[in-house]
Amino acid sequence: MKPVLVPFFIPHLGCPHRCIFCDQVKIAGARSVLPDPAELRGRIAEYRSAAPGRALEVAFYGGTFTALPIEDQRRLLEPLQPLIACREVQSVRLSTRPDAIDPGTVSFLLSMGVTTVELGVQSMDGQVLTRSRRGHTAADVERAVSLLAEGGVSVGIQLMPGLPGDSEERSLASLRRVLALSPSFLRIYPALVIDGTELADLYLRGEYRPLSLDEAVSVSKKMLTAARKAGVPVVRMGLQPTAELEAPGVILAGPYHPAFRQLVEGELMYDRACELAAGLPAGSEVTFAVSRGKVSDLVGQRRLNVKRLTERFGIRVAGVREDDALAEGEVSLTARESERM
Image 1 (cartoon, rainbow, N blue to C red):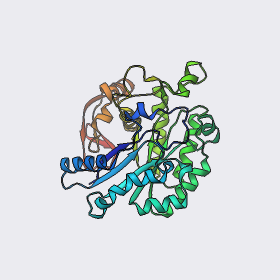
Image 2: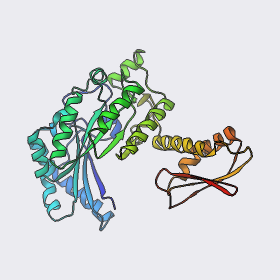
Image 3: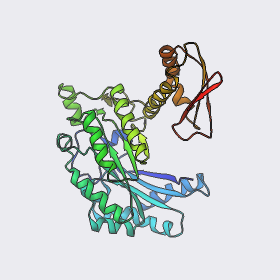
């Protein structure tokens, strides 16, 4: 069973500069103030009471944790040490930049019980990184992953297709370079235009065109497929919906959808269903089976996939059911007395 995450948001804190796409306060809905020891212990106690018997993982999101002054890093991590020692907290994760990792940093994190580090990579393309004012290189990413992996730290990588200068080909090339590093997991966040950012200024001047929703779903589908083939989990696609993010005027443009991952998974399911339905006689009555929890993905939002299958192949979808014998992402089709898989 996965541990229960106890999240703390420290937006922008430690960041050496502001990337053109970033406004973490609006994205996360959190203020840029470090939680004090009492706040840390209090929230952990709340989560422990709400989930008795479950393992807890403390997570620091946003900002550049390892670029904080070392005294601030200690201020956040030292109150956790007694809880780690008595196993009330099982693990700790944090987010940082690839160029804020060095051997001394890795040693310090290990001494403080940090088990997972997420790197805000966004792209492995030099032109995209420069135009987005990331301030790091692909070589920094490779070095950071190597140092963390050598220390036994799990590494997550965040990618952001659709930044200035990016293209589907460059996004997929970035993904291939990242997969070659064997990260523990990925997050894929298509770029959005957030009010108040430099990217918003470029957009309003007509100097930047964000991905459309269809384009973002298409490239994300290809990235998800490649990651699965490589055995690397994609733990999130698209930003987490928040009241702050969805407030009027915050997102000026870009492929935002509160259920973005379902759109991507739905397209993958539709592709597989089309492969199975190809060649069936028009008018066939079919039933699809999917792995647990994937019925809504195959049906599609507002039954879009069912409608498209009916229009494209002239079949009638009698139902979609779960089948525990199917692995995640697998689909089977029963038409009359025959079954395809």
